[in-house]
Amino acid sequence: MYQRSTHFNNESTEERNIHLGIDLWSAAGSSVICPLDGIVHSFNNNTEIGDYGPTIILKHSIKKETFYTLYGHLSLESIENLKIGMPFKKGNQLATLGIAEINGDYAPHLHFQIIKNIGDYRGDYPGVCSQSNLDFYKDNCPDPNLLLKIKI
Image (cartoon, rainbow, N blue to C red; front, top):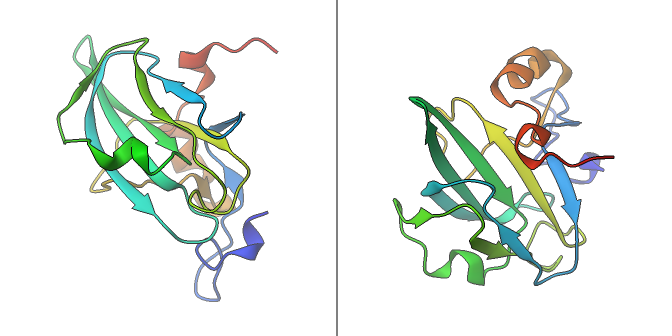
């Protein structure tokens, strides 16, 4: 799936093909709800083929622990009126899902990811990694189901 894009694969880097988040498939326009209180850390329209398209990253602080959640493949309208530091409450609508033409050429879905240390990233963070970086990303990007609690 990622081989179609030079964003994930080029001759100078190792292939990135291990997915780090969870994808939740739903219709374009579906609401994306905040799983917990947070503030807007950053947002961006990541326009490469195979990338996230419109993306929002929230910053959360719980019991002196700070971490981030990433929401990718959103609608353009989702990022139009955002401001850094804007608060969102648990249960509030954060965004809506986008169409394939604006969200990296994927069928409508949400890419949801938890990030412990976001470093210098703004409005973007790797959602797939290479085998050689897997240990780092497994530690830095905990299982998203810790928050979502989806039962299979």
